Image (cartoon, rainbow, N blue to C red; front, side, top):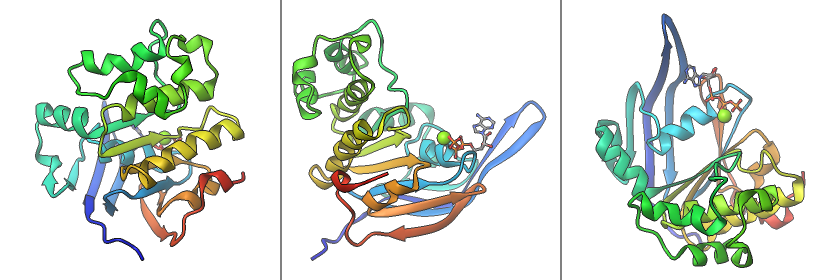
Length: 238
Ligand SMILES: Nc1ncnc2c1ncn2[C@@H]1O[C@H](COP(=O)(O)OP(=O)(O)OP(=O)(O)O)[C@@H](O)[C@H]1O
Ligand SMILES: [Mg+2]
């Protein structure tokens, strides 16, 4: 039996134009998309297609130039910078390809940093336990493997218990086995904790673990596919 899910994010004819000096570049056009609450979404497409641009707009990191983006029914395209900042701080966790950890801080301190930015978070030690790094609290990034550093960045993103977890090529810098552990953690965020997870990748094998696969090509959504029974990240091979 499938439970009924609600729409969390809705894109209505969204477009994005970048201006650099006199050069105008249309990175996205006519994007229509719905992301359901608790859904695991994979955004796939070739380099330069507009995946990161789309992800940034999902999380209010960048503003659309046209169209509307609704989050939980609220029009975030109308938010000013202050409200957008509050929205990101409260509702959005982000995981990047290259971890973005502060090298001079331990794993624990990297997660705890969120609190100093005024963001309400769970106990940093607990967040690190959740990603299997309970015994690595006092390690600096340079003392951890790439996969462990990425897990710290996931701990940092989930410590504030965001509704939405965004990941841009989260396994891009990792080997297959470590990448798989990271994918497992991300899938768990959706399946066990009911978070909405949106992951950008150019690895089409990752499509199998998603509830919904959004194909981006030439600056727009070219196709959307659904997996009735998403594959466990454990079983993924690539
Ligand atoms: N800040 C910017 N200013 C100007 N052009 C930009 C900017 N950011 C992205 N672009 C352009 O918009 C297009 C889409 O970029 P985007 O980063 O979204 O692609 P992508 O699908 O994530 O690619 P990749 O897989 O290589 O990361 C590209 O042609 C890029 O050069
Ligand atoms: Mg990108």
